[in-house]
Length: 160
Image 1 (cartoon, rainbow, N blue to C red):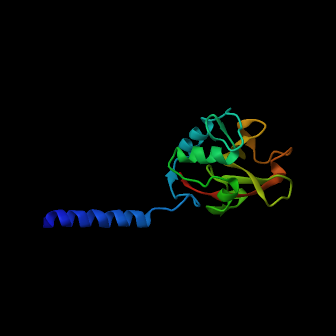
Image 2 (cartoon, rainbow, N blue to C red):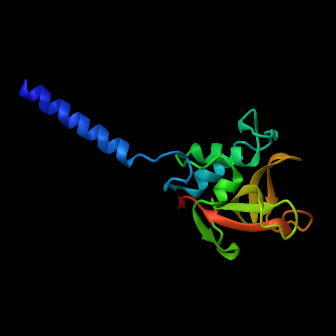
């Protein structure tokens, strides 16, 4: 009887500890370490998938749904919207971008309101789901559109 009571008490204590230290909601990205090659491979696996407003699956992605899906494949949980993603992680200077950093853009040149996000994949390129091309790779300095809409970047995972 004492043995059963002791086991039950220990299990209850462990359950309480687990619940206490579990994250609540998805307001912040989880700290995680992934390899840059795994991340880029996971990102590129969705190239060509069409854009769907509010899309979060391989049937179609919006920009933040695509990022959330891609990072989740490697165990990193991100918030659902690009605006919420912009409020997570650590600020990164554009000159210090690393593979896996999230990059954010506004709807118009000079705008400070985040309306689009992608993932930096190196060589001044980012991968994202755009309404015109779906999941595609674009220059971060694209002179025709993205270059002058760049707002900033965040590091949301430790990428080796």
